[in-house]
Image (cartoon, rainbow, N blue to C red):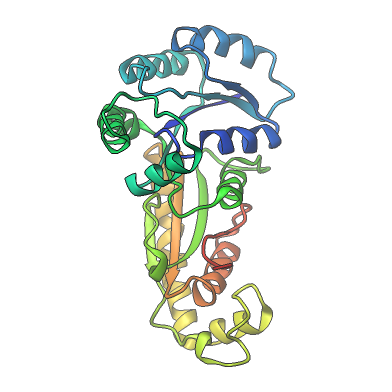
Length: 281
């Protein structure tokens, strides 16, 4: 069975980065194909894509495309293929404005100002965003972080089930991730930041991990969260969810959340690596 991924979203939210990352993962990537050709090309591409991890359509120029037509094309693809998913890339308006001003490119959606064009595109694309299987907010990610997130979500994993489960660590001081399903707060745990020898290290270092995990509240927390997820994950899969993203947060996203997220991945026996959003901040 060949996976088909339709990548779309707000202009400036990172489609080119995602396209490159998927190509590096061995996906057959088709960029900016006219919507009326997607279904036909999808048939041809999947018929000869046995050597590829999947087929990805990168749909841009959202100011000129009709979202209703895109959703209709996806519906047709789903009549032919078992696994067709929509990935929607998003970012806050101020971030999109900053990116466009930095490149001096013209926004594809009509508008008297850049802010108006982005606002109009957001309204136009709302139906597609609502229909997406997974939404990634790229506002707080640089190019390398976005590539890592795509690798974590779409790299082939032996024995993977119908639903992809991933874990993110983050710092509340850097903003709550907008593209996650479940959020757990571990700020109640003693903070290694206040231990001089541990402050420059991260939760990936053995000394920090031991400091966090040896605390009785950490073990209690991990036991409770693991027990919850062990029955919730199959329940989400039964409901047909394609992706489930679990976020673990602490204050800065460098120590406690990193150690807890890594241990939670181990306890859940997940093959996908943890995405540490803020560990290098």
